[in-house]
Length: 209
Image (tube, rainbow, N blue to C red; front, top):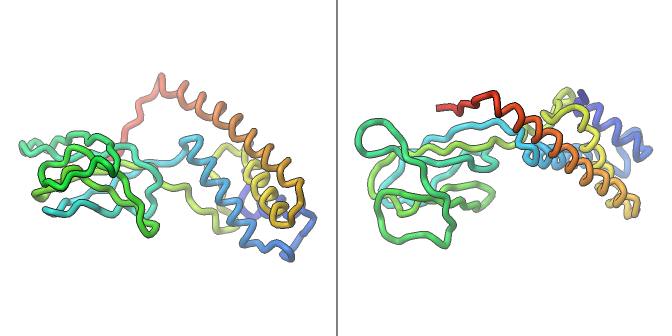
């Protein structure tokens, strides 16, 4: 496995700049994290979590957790007192309704960098809503932090970071590294997703309650 410190050192070896000069460590770490976020999402390696919401009559939008990446499903409690939940239909902002009632669907909204869920129609009573979602890839900050993607693909983070470094230098060679990065993503997705789908034939994955 390659920790952040090793990934950074490998990038600096590739651009022949052992210590910060034209490129800062902060730049390389930012590029490595951009690649890490994409690879983690593309291969569906994020963990799942749950946000519980108590609606307010007349309020349409509700903030989601700061680590929200993408939604898995949303559901609301059924009014019969059974404690059971009904899955809400994913809609779009163009489906908004001005009327109030029991939410049947939802849409996602991002304003000022915060993801929100909008309920359709707007709730008319206090209701319990649960949102299951994929968590953002953990940001690599400490020297010992390691990506969750398989170690044999850690070099793809370096490919992207070096590509961005060379692009900053206006070196056309950045295109070679970027092409290798994109090709590597295709290979990794095929490899990782096939393994996951094969395993899913024999395993039952239970979401948090």
